[in-house]
Image 1 (cartoon, rainbow, N blue to C red):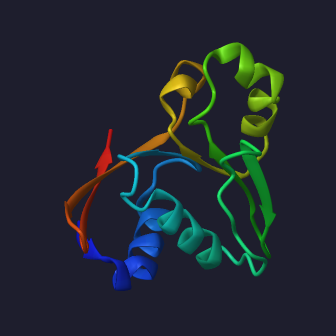
Image 2: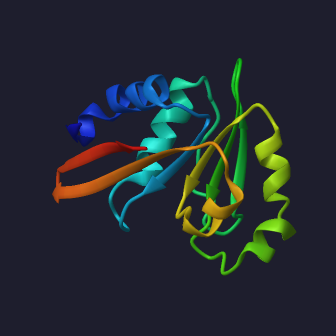
Length: 132
């Protein structure tokens, strides 16, 4: 799916609708719009509070009308021991959306997830693919 930033809300709705799991992994280079898409997804899921990137906190928790959302940024995580230290597996046991940026280190701990790949086509345009 090719889109421009002004279409982000439509793309967020489509990702929520088409994802085969509530655990969604975002594979994209720096500056591709992972956090922007996740913020839009959170708003679509009923989050009213300010949504910020968990770059330094590793995980942010949000509560919508019907959904709990955990937004992870694993960029600074170096090994799976650090994931265990933050209780990563406990988050996965909840019936919540787990939206994970920089997910590579976590894949070995996951059994059910939807991977999303975002590619930068030009400064204004992105391509999103659902990866099985």
